[in-house]
Length: 446
Length: 178
Image 1 (cartoon, rainbow over the protein chains, first blue to last red):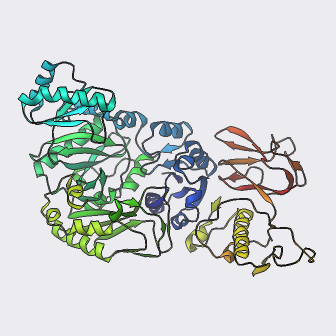
Image 2 (image 1 turned 60 degrees about the vertical axis):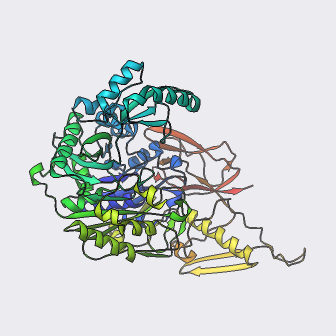
Image 3 (image 1 turned 90 degrees about the vertical axis):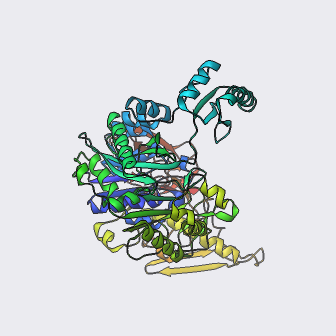
């Protein structure tokens, strides 16, 4: 086991890793920027080292300074947390070249699965279903019709050069296809100066379901169940839960098996998450892999009783996972709400300033992960995640009631937060009935 | 560098700081700003063994008034975030001066006073420095960087020790400007 770990991150995830280190009897060294100087959570680390100015590119993204900090503090390993350098293969490589273990996967699998296109190819090779599509730019009309018939209508015509939802057009019927392609090409040329198009199966009202994978360096690759993260706003997750209320046992089993198959085929050897879209018919499609620990990992910790950060650190230290798939048991239902320092009435504008009142909820089955407290200063320089509330109860209705209570109990003043909209979501009948999709929040509340 | 002993870890004690001069100067800057804002001419603070006296020219005094201390000169830096009680930070028995300029570390690394173990240090107390005078070496990942003063004056104090690990922004030297 490592003697000393350098934490190359900040805020709630830094605190989370510090806590795991404490329980593993490992010394923790936390880096900080001048903006975070004096933050309370730093006092929980055994040592804290300033690595630069407020802007992330002046500090938390400065790989050389982070490695230098690990050197002078004589750390054995670096934990990158999430965001920042967590999925930076060059940084992982540099760490290992400097004899510092990087707490994450090996560089080859990070590169293979970190790139969307490369991951898609890896999925196909592993016979994991991806969103059916033309897999390349459409060349001629005959090919286009063939591909569309193969994938099945409705199809989505997408511009290669498009993005953020632009340059997309839906086609329900074969008879409309060619005319639609012609028009889409014209529009793409006009908007992006690039008329390249591809087509994909249209997935109506998808749910986002991801599988937590954990692996060690001895070939063991396991899944720890799925998390349903369908409740999003502009592709940012607001609420996560496990198990997913939208899939049956068969789909769950296939989904988790597919995730393990993909991770294993890529030689993955740490904690990671495989993301899928699930359509109304229970069909799932691989989207991407996150080769790091995720914000919502506590949801999985709740239902499995497994400490993911400790497992990740142990794996990086060369230990074998001390449980097999058959030893993983799932119990109850867990829900996490992310509370952001954003003003829902002002189009979720991020808010900064000093918190004068921070009263988190408590009680049975309640966990709050946050670096905030009375007097904490929120910086506009970093992401707006303020706190995570996780409830774990025997059933979903009980978990919902618990969360409703927690959101009502939670007080944060004077900073505007997303608590009001989370309360509305948690009390909405569609949430209880689970008839939501990734567009629900924007349609209903915005 | 903020380092806690195991005993401190257990007690959740405020950081033992090795950046005493840095913090004192920042706090003194805040005191100076407070004095100016409230039009105070003299301010004395005592906390245990530490005492700080600040005096600024009396804005209401005539041109030939008696003892004028020179206007306090502090490096132009943004104020420290948050509002800590100034008394907390005076943990040493030293009195900080207000008219010195800090040379701060631009990186994380190990401080070396001289070019190699057998040579004398680049600068001693009292040495004159200009903007491109090399004052020390900082080493990180086997790369040795010469650090320049980037200010003019005389070395008043050397704050880092040979072989010491330093963090970004840590004060290495105090320079009395010309």
